[in-house]
Length: 131
Image (cartoon, rainbow, N blue to C red; front, side, top):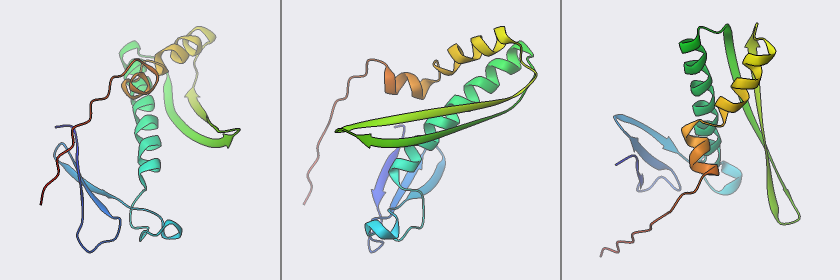
């Protein structure tokens, strides 16, 4: 199992997340009825996407021995005319030449989370109701 998420009794919307051996939480902000004790699911989604992008670029540059010093990925989201517009901004620091820069633009698209979001994915839902 990749992740298991369970409500915490008596904790409002707070969720306990088990991902591998790590445990952490998600919550809604106070203005949405939560306690604001942890990132909300939307924030976790973008954090995972950005972390994957950064790690993919770091790994590639490390293998190639390219002078990448740091990567910063940020997202903005806007709703217009019934659609969601997402801007993903990737800032790279390091003495990278134009060929390296062009290649890194391609590599960023190969991040596994990016592939999951933009590639062909089939979702199967299983419902279990218990008394």
